Amino acid sequence: MVLLEIQNITKIFGGLIALRDVSFDINRSEIVGLIGPNGAGKSTLFNIISGFHHPDKGRILFKDRQINGLQVDRIARMGIGRIFQEPTLFMQETIFENVLSGFHRHYREAAWKALLHTPAANREERIKKNKAIEILEFMELSALSGELAANLPHGRQRVLAIAIALASEPDLLLLDEPVTGMNPSETTTMIEKIRQIRGRGITVLIVEHDMRAVMSLCDRIVVLNLGVKLVEGTPDRIKSDERVIEAYLGKQVI
Amino acid sequence: MKLLNNGVNDRNSRLKLGAIIVALVALIILPLCIESDYIKHLLIMVCIGTILGMTFSMLYSTGLITLGAAAFYAVGAYTSTMLVTSAGLSFWAALPLTVIVAVVLSLGFGAIFVRNAGVAFVIITLIFVQVIVIAAGQVEFLGGWGGIMGIPRPDSLGPVEFTTKQDLYYLILAILLLIIIIYNALYSSRIGRAWRAIKLSPNLAGTLGINAYRYRLLAFVIGSTTAAVAGCFYAHYFQNITPGAFAGWLSIYVQLYAVLGGLEFYILGPAFGAVIMTFVPEYLRVVKEIEPIVTGVLLLIIILFFPGGILGTIKNPPDLSLKSFKSRLSRVKNRLSQGNKS
Image 1 (cartoon, each protein chain N blue to C red):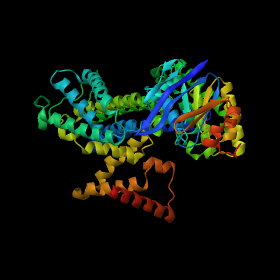
Image 2: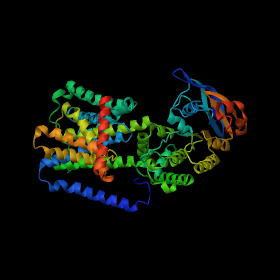
Image 3: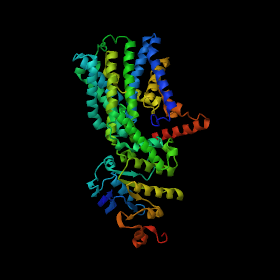
Image 4: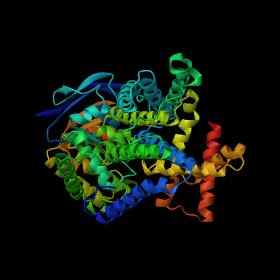
């Protein structure tokens, strides 16, 4: 079942073509990798899907509804979560508060009830807090939950970014370089976590330069080069595709 | 952190509760220990200043800086005055009507203003307050530049009268406490969390489904309405209003209350700032002509070297060694030279 349809997306920045006629689908519960050399248009595509940029041509359907042109927060409320390439956290808040902020769109009780601390609102707040604790345990951040986000090492900040995104309970999660800059053992753990995230019923689209991670993780890979979709297929097919090897991987890598 | 770790901070929250009760008792018995009507007047000004500072902080908590905190203070003062003097309503009928007028007007203006973040918002609010002042001055119906005299004191509520400075202090204290309770509830709820999220990272907040525009508009409306309530009290306390009373400096002072007390302390920061900014200049008035200069230099030192404000400095005491002083000095120099270049 198709969750996200990217149809003929073209994006031009001041005469420079960032994406040209890119199309592919993402099915529910898939892990899809998006790879390509620097400047291939991966981040631009991420920004278009999450609403930070608007495409010049083409459309994007999420759960059969067109989402391009909508505001970032509107797209997020429809169920698309993302992490950013650069550490983007609520730096001056604790880990726990960071994750709690992630639940924002899932409150059902009216805000005024929360202000008056009605029993129903208190119960909801308690449930969210327990869920936050559960997510912190899942992402192995429990021990640090009172620490400020700014004080975390880089690798942990990435983990926290994913924890916040999980709290927003997305149907589709966009991960921009989740393991870049991590050491091998952190990378292995993160790969396992992303598999478990898929196990929670979350579809994942991932941009990553670490080929080992991408190849072991993804069901399907889309290769972009200079804004054009080069090829799409299973990791095995991508590994052996000559165009990909030429354009991107280099002949000796795999 | 507050209220987040249920149970974990039991001792802390009990301590906090104790401090609140002590402060409350102190605020209630304070005027009974003071003879001077002038000091009581200053206490009332502290309460008003705290309320206005809190409205600045509320917008600041969403990442917006306003230089127009006095705009709705003026709107509130004029609305209530007109309702009482022209329409003949009692203060207690005019107050809720003023709130409604403020909500409607701030919703209308805020819907336009809040679209612009950053410097644009600062400038718009700065201009807005000037426009309000000039409008009040130019309209004959509002008393023109001479303002309106003889505004009655708040009507008595049954046996409770509002004639002496002491009565009026208790009235504004009650209003202040009510506002603090509401603001505290907001800040510790998911609304306050969303406000901080927008300030700390608008992009991340967006990807979590938080609509920055709507939440900033909410803060603008609540802040403006609060300021209008303060203005309403001000008009009936001073019993006369002139457009000049709401001009530029007031909004700057309001901002200073928040900065001086500590920007990250949305309620206590303005309170501390208002106390200091009200009382210190009074006692510095040795030579009246240079008082603003002395106050200004003091503020400059605090803002440059203690950017956390008074409460921020107490919470995270700065390193007072010579080395850290030098590094801070060079940072300040850098900042100033960058300012010169641009």
